[in-house]
Image 1 (cartoon, helix red, strand yellow):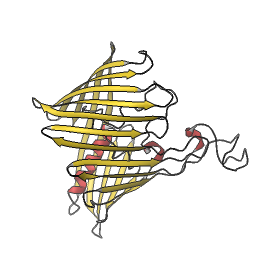
Image 2 (cartoon, helix red, strand yellow; image 1 turned 90 degrees about the horizontal axis):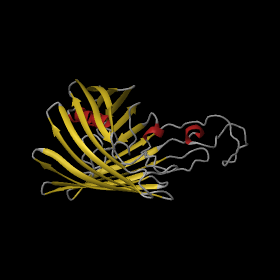
Image 3 (cartoon, rainbow, N blue to C red; image 1 turned 45 degrees about the vertical axis):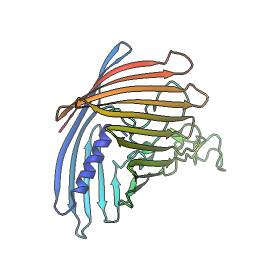
Image 4 (cartoon, rainbow, N blue to C red; image 1 turned 135 degrees about the vertical axis):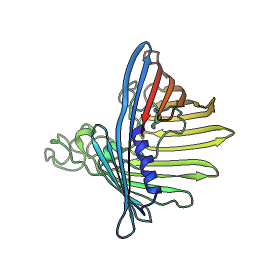
Length: 326
């Protein structure tokens, strides 16, 4: 779950919390960039250039409706209908239930707190990394329950994707060459509608969340049910976080972290261990500190990644992040 999605979710929550008695409209924006020194190679890049328009009103039947339009590289719009018995989510910007709940509570970086820390790493070719089901879901529809004994349930359904091209072999009982299924890569063989489920709440002061996505392909690519579970707790000025991301393939990452406030600055340290079946396991340590200056925040991270089986893929990265929002 990236920074722009987190901001969109926060904006939506604010709009819904405001109620639908009167029409409201707000405009906000976010720019996030970084300067990184990757073992001597200095690079400057940006991760988010986003503009948001939020609108809320009430329907004739008393239900609330809100619209959040995000403008980045493309325009995406969320339409949310508060029925009083939960929220129905429509539009082309609806995240999978897992994606909207799997932010890493063990991470304390200003901008790097998505889900699995080393997700997408190329150090273990062929590995199935943690997949939140969001991309495969496409334009989803969803439902989020009201709070029930402190817990909220979310379910989303993606759309079916048809295979591309003809088939050379078939594992589904169809005639070879009939074009019904394409075997090979997930990008061309299509998949069934992606179902994603998540629950979040609090137990005895511990914030917890868990979820699973079901991605079933039409061809030879193995079906997967990636999942996550996480927990966080605050005590004596310390924030403790735990998360596990299971790719249901060849990788599983466990992250632990602790953070606090030092001289008015949020600081924290994160440790993660990614187990790679048949490959090289990956250990990561990240030390983070950040400071808010009102509309602008600056953060510094030191990230050390160690790949088992040699030092060729190990990295030590210093990065400075800056975020400007309005």
